[in-house]
Image (cartoon, rainbow, N blue to C red):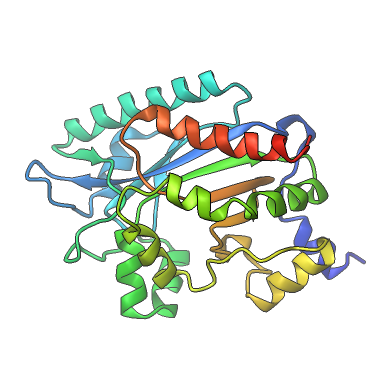
Amino acid sequence: MESKIQKFLNKFNFREETKWRIGIERERFLVNHSGIVVPKAEEFLAEINDPLWTYELSACQVEDRTAPIADIGRVFMALKRNDERGHNTARNIGLALAEIEVGPPGMPTKIFPISRYRQIKQNVSPEQLIAACRVAGTHVHIGMANIKECITAYNILRKYLDYFCKLGDHSIGERLRLYKTMAQNWMPPRIKDTKNFFEIAEKNNFIEDPRNCHWLIRISIHGTVELRMFGSYRLLSEVTDYAKVAVLALLNNRFS
């Protein structure tokens, strides 16, 4: 009979062939011609009809992502292709994608209509919902071969948390302040081993769905260590720089 710990660990898709591969996720606000944030994610996603584009909690946001890629140059090109497709699609429906990391205080709090998000809305305070809708970020995934390697990488990257937070901040700390209002369990704790990871997940209520872990650095169901503290960016090259510094942090600590 499968143990509770193994059942939990089976939710994570680790693969040897994707070790060190980089995946990027970018959340963007949708705005109209007046620059006002609007809840038009359903219209945008129907128009673009692309699996590399998906929804977020806020119906005012969409997310693009890359496949796991080994070469940083190819990551940059994948992001550029997504940008071209996304900006063209937004223009086709009278909108624009905005690379801002904090939405305005009075923006709509309409959520994207899926059951998981409806449940989240029911379980958070109005203040937390507003905070969650107002933040947009850039997430960096680094593929790992197995859970033990991922725990090691995770613990190394934890040491750089403050540095990463400052590196990816373009709102004088406002995005992270709002994020911490939304995700009060934002601080990534040290993980000793797989048993300890299970115990922490049980205590923090993400045994059934690891996506409910909102640490700024987390072990992702995609078989990656995921950095979630980066905000928006002024230049596309900043996004790949986020990935570079994370990989270098691991290499400098003799992780291979």
